[in-house]
Length: 195
Image 1: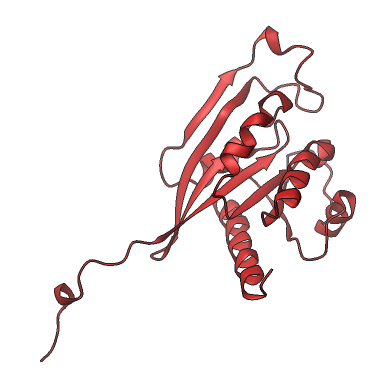
Image 2 (image 1 turned 135 degrees about the vertical axis):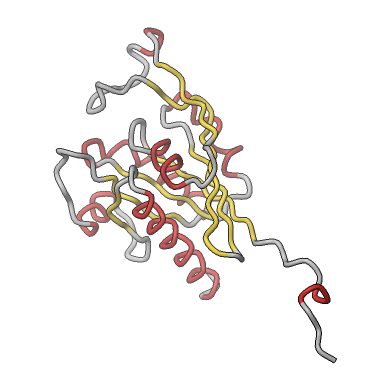
């Protein structure tokens, strides 16, 4: 007797993975979450006020007028079996206390690097290394910024050879998707090798 689709019951729900998007202030976290999300992203961007003068380092991003004060949230369906929930972290040191809460349950992370201010992504790299959370580094290629090869960035950050380093444009959905696919492949490789 032949069975039809209704005999199989409902299709299984896709696996949901929590991914963090981190990096320094002004590196492109909010932009990445917004450009790749298939839903209207939740953003806690607020206009910067005079109260931030002397507190936030704007060198290299002097034209920035808003900042994430809590988190950014977006979602992207990778396949019928996999959905990623993206949580963008705030970049300024005064909001880092939120990182531990945001990291709870995260299976991986993207660290966005801005080569104009590469030192601003060190805290993110350190955070994920200390917690054993797999991450990739996405070098956001800003207009007018010097272009460095992934190996040069890897050396400057002191990363091991296994951590993927990719060039990307946080404004371009396909570029961001490539970064997320590289992260998923990296996580799968670590799981398969028992790391």
